[in-house]
Length: 136
Image 1 (cartoon, rainbow, N blue to C red):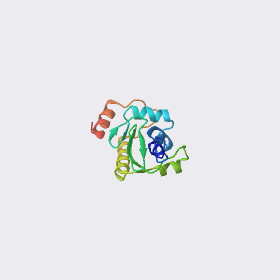
Image 2: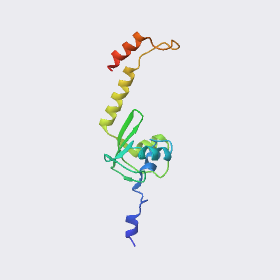
Image 3: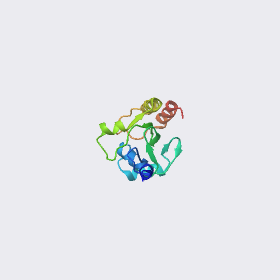
């Protein structure tokens, strides 16, 4: 009798990973979250998982979207998608993740070279400079 409540997969302290990612506002739709999980862009406890994987408080999740990567620890569960200030309370980003994201952002800024709009393609000389600066 009391056992069924402990085995209930929709208990308030756990939630499907795709639904949690959507509620925490990492993805705009649950479908996008599911596709990212199935595509290997989201890992739980350093393992590739399926969208139906249950997450609880304290679970470590790594999320990659384009050039950005977050490593977060689940702090809470929300059955609804709430405003961004409330969604931020559902997770805590690790200090290493914050540092990595900031350094990656700085790196991308450094690689970007200001060019006058409408000037057209860079010349061969300009491309050589770009290659020299970027270190490729």
